[in-house]
Length: 371
Image (cartoon, rainbow, N blue to C red; front, top):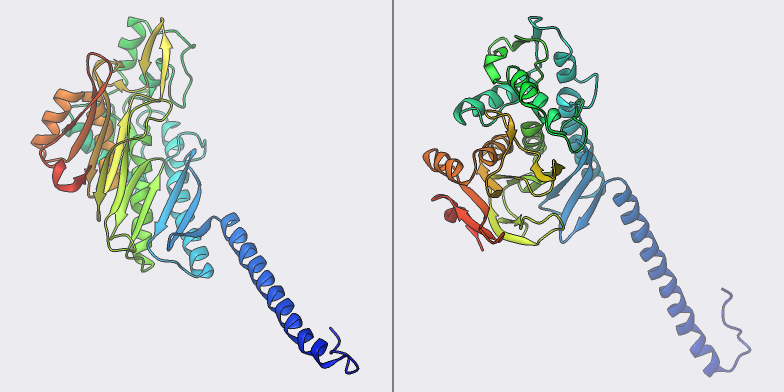
């Protein structure tokens, strides 16, 4: 912009300079605002952004999505590096344990003939060992070989039954012969060698692998020097440290309702994991009746009790994930009895005679939760 005309009257020259200054200041603010918006847009498209003083990472995985809240506002370069690290950890689990990827380690194991040994990777062996342990301790309620039965009832990743049709008694009897954890699997946790004992046996680690993925991310964040974070994958959560304001992380347990029924209970957590299992979202109509996607490996049939959802607290998300499934199979009475015998913090939502949900908490739950 040219300087003021010296031939102008003094009063006009005096006003020109402030106008120039104001216009320049406006241009600077506008440019900085646009630059800041462009930076935020670029960061969000890269899968990270700053929210309420925290850096939030997001992305797809396991057919669902993950979210990581780091309890600090990080520089973009640092946030991007963490995002790459988180993606690598979760993708590693997917490559090993996916039931949908034909070239995953688990799919290759399932494709082997019975008796053919395979040395599993350390992560897959670790998850399988935990799954078999929970299977024993839950009296067979948790079983990673239940896949053929799940498919027969119209759920799962394998060949499904026709819609609206229940498997007959002969089919159930045959398929139950392929179920039973160590009864149909050989696995040595020391050597990591495994094989199937029968043709048709299939291992599905979906009910624990998601939680294990959360644990891997937490471990990676710790190695990267992160002290405070919340990691969530498809509803399974583990917390590390605390929020930026010094308060514990607060998590809501969903009110069971296919349309989304709000929060039934709030849990305040530091360095704990939370997993929830329920029958209120995934179900089918079979012979005119609502059938839960949760199959009891012992009976070979869908669960029929009134437990709508069960939430479990544990030191690791893999353990919480597996036990939430096991207790969901066992039901409100047997499940709560086993949880209290094992000093396991559990919160259940049970349907009453009128269809309303009633909360039931184990003796250890109040010490770690808040309404």
